[in-house]
Length: 93
Length: 526
Image 1 (cartoon, one colour):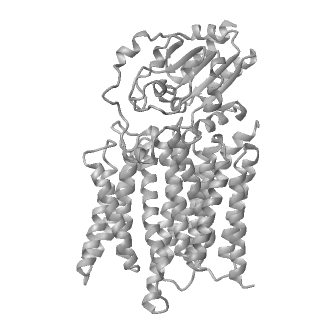
Image 2 (cartoon, one colour; image 1 turned 60 degrees about the vertical axis):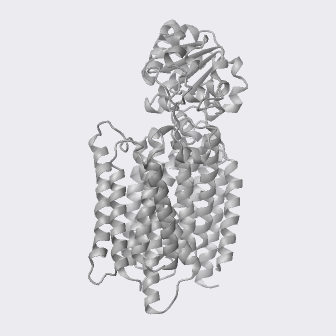
Image 3 (cartoon, chains in turn blue, yellow; image 1 turned 90 degrees about the vertical axis):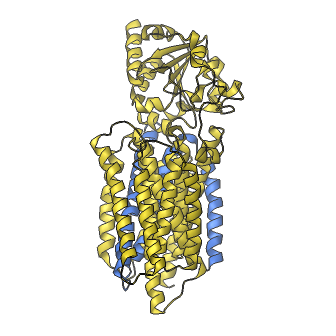
């Protein structure tokens, strides 16, 4: 995709983000943060592409392998912790 | 359709699921489902990435297995009171991942450019520099936020062994890794003068980061000048890095300078301002992800990154508004007593202390009680005890509610999570503006470990450092009971005239023990 197309996606997504997040009540702000935190671990996709792609220098694989670790912690930890918190909100809702 | 088209479609589905996740977060009933939508979105994005193409599995599997283990265990073990630290740390990991992905893609690009197969376009150059800057600020800033919340950075007291390992281990790792890499580059045979200078620069930044993390206080002379210097250097290096995009040394030098900036920006921020910082770093980690998306031309990264970026910015704004302060003031200002701060002894002349028995008598026959929790409740882990007291009172027909200030605690919504952990139904949690309108009908307000957020000076004294900050108007309730260890001031460093008000009684004790004593007294009175 061209740069302008990507920039369009970026700007529109920010607006969607503003719209959606404003509706979240303060009670849920902590799970919102840890949940969105897990989503920001999407960098994992980038890390996987580079760590798995053949015919790249070994250094690329090593560096992105470490990135895979960090991003996975972010994703898994973020989702698990959010689920734990949200269950506490729900069980007597 | 080509494989790449299918893959892009899957990314679109993932992006939609992330938006749905955040939409469902708007209500406690749908929020659990929302989180699962996010999980599915992530699974689809990952599946689309690794399927349908030749893969080298060693590093992928290694990273995924170790990361899953570490992330899962940490998330399952963490106490609800330590949630701010945990979220802070995970934020940092996201930032680190972005920095590394951009670095790896830079190395890949260089080898391609050397082979003459491709040349770097402007988008890649700018995005790589942006990722290095934002990602590194996020990572090091988050580490400092984590360290300050877990109370092992910038404190004077003695640390436990685990805290020592974290504190000194991290500093040693940064110093050895950074200085080792920089020195090797600077001393390499045939290194040019510029290479030597950049290598030296990396050594200096690594040592600076490691050193600042060992300082035992929040602020030191010249810290503001240093912040400005680090910011200027980091931006200059960004420009240099755009002009010379395949220079790895320059990239790591930029990461180093941005790291110094991240550490300096966060270390001087006080505990009560942490909600703002955590929200801001959350936003940065998203933006770093989006920037990485521009580096590798990937839409799902851009969409998710900007969603998170937007969410963090909104939360930051909410927090700042709740403290009536601007962002610049939080990041660069120091809140402290002004010259006109009234003398504490004078203000506290008419303070009345009370006992559990007296409180039990007061709670006899009342209709409405409101509990105002603050960070003190988290520290004392008193949420379960508070819930027991509320149950006891509810059994007697009293209506017990909780008034939560937006910045109570150390992250947005911190108190709500703790009370939810103690099985308090969320309908009982009232927002500040909502409860303030009914405060005159409240018989007893129990303030537990909160101070500045109930200080009426914010309404009455325009010269006070917290002037104009929205507060919970407990002073308007018929009776106020403040549970507090001593009359020591809150983060704003000013005395609280509420404590000496005619309708206020002080119960000097540790939060949890105080509530236990009150429960005991209420039971005995019955």
